[in-house]
Length: 258
Image (cartoon, rainbow, N blue to C red):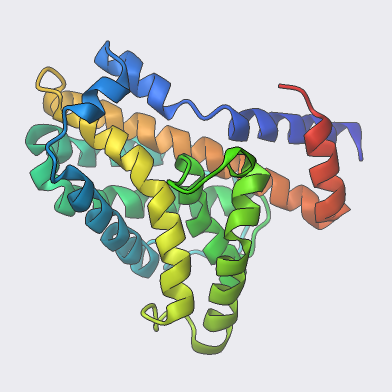
């Protein structure tokens, strides 16, 4: 592997294996995010789970429209500013506003993820690349059934591989329109289960009274930045896999110390 590519892979591993959204939210709150999560009402879990799944469905329908395959630098800062603007609603009204705010912020984040994917050479007109963009949301936090082997980047990819393969086979024949098909339902459910963890942390941060609407914008910006980092790492790895093969990249990845 070329030394420049090894350096890029090392940077990708740093981004993917040191997700800091919970720590950064804790710094914004001035208190551990786990304490804020524990203060959410009992019904919050059901509300967040439902809102997360609906937000992913809405994002998939809207976010990837209008993209071509022309490679160019991603507009990360612009996307951070737009998603911060949507955070005022969540910060001002907390959990009751989640069903309105989350689809907007998720769609904006998916557009940013797609922008990063394109900059790394992904062909966004291809269904596999579109599902890979959606899968970035699964990199936001561990799922409830994860064991130690499934919390690292390649562990998460392996855990989701069958559901993604089935979903890809479905969209190859039917397109994205029939999202209620079992293969797509399973894939979306796996992504949603993982995405709901950082969403819970985001809602908890925005629900703290002293944070308010201004803090809601800050929380959304931090949330966007986290998934931009996950996307950058993920699509860097995928670009190198296209050059060297998945097995060689994974072998080199395992040897890198962070």
